[in-house]
Amino acid sequence: MATGTEPHPPRGGVRTGTRAAIAAPHLRTDRWWLTPAATAAGLLAFVVYSTWRAFANTDYYAAPYVSPFYSPCLAENCAPMRGGPNWEVFGAWWGLSPALLILIFPLGFRLTCYYYRKAYYRGFWASPPACAVAEPHAKYTGETRFPLVLQNVHRYFFYAALLVAGILTYDTVLAFRDETYAWGHMGLGTLVFLVNIVLIWAYTLSCHSCRHIVGGRLRHFSRHPVRYRMWGLVSRLNGRHALLAWASLVSVALADFYVYLLATGAFDDPRLF
Image 1 (tube, rainbow, N blue to C red):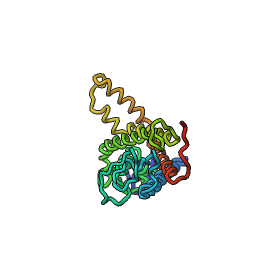
Image 2: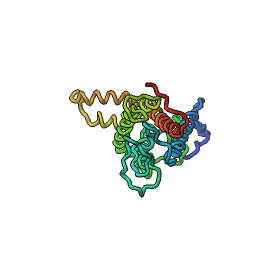
Image 3: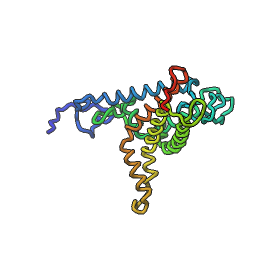
Image 4: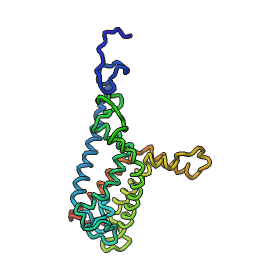
């Protein structure tokens, strides 16, 4: 029972007069800060690595493998990729790394992804830092103002991500060639690319927008049995969306790093058959 002598809760964030009068910052006894800290560290590591590789403009092709960061290569200054996705859409005027022309689409898809929003909102902005931990900011406007209102373009980035995944699938098919571009090859890099493309497709199709596109705006699933089955499959993937987001993020970085090691001569691609 309130006695009128309790200290007034500090103002700001969710600590307003309409909230429960809890003086402590939170009532959690576990190490709740580990998850947002680990999330921030993981995302920061990927940002640093991908930025370095995107601006490096070198060591992204080792026959028959092309880095997923640079595919499709759209500039005239691309490294020679015999039989690969080297489309000189941009002329010689583009002097920067060709990766900057393509990475905007998969990165835009991930930056606007519902899971990644939660991850970097909590990890970098502490908005909120964790469940049952008070919002530290003075006010909350959600995604109703610039620049966060731009998160609504996520569905359009999803369409672009489908195209990118299709191109990376083509790259994976080309990974079954040897250094002379003859078919019938399988190296360690082929397996790396296979795992990567499976995770890329699984993450892309587990997207919330994909789930809505497949099964949304239907009044009766019984009248649309094909879409219902597709919706069920996508829903199962959607339940693992966070796991697939991290797994595909790691796999795409490993695929790029593997190509980098081959291109720099660190070792030769072990041939399985």
